[in-house]
Length: 108
Image (spheres, rainbow, N blue to C red):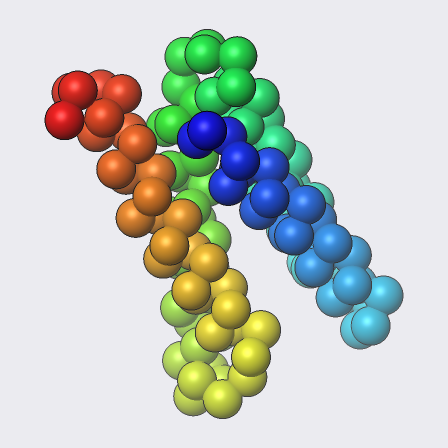
């Protein structure tokens, strides 16, 4: 069950990065979108197959997504929908995967 958000975010980030590149020819968009999307897909695979470090990788990806969204929200003064969506997705994913990490690691 914990792999579903990872696979969903993998698809959304890859599609968003590709759309950002097509719209503005922004190489950072496609590199970040495909890179983070691939990393989320790999963490989803690790979680699905019960291998080590799946939750840790997903949590790291989520913190990275959240951290990359904060400067964008500040820069746009919270008026653009894309940075706000990234911020919300990063915050929700970070909360979810820190909870899963604690469950897997400590049984809490």
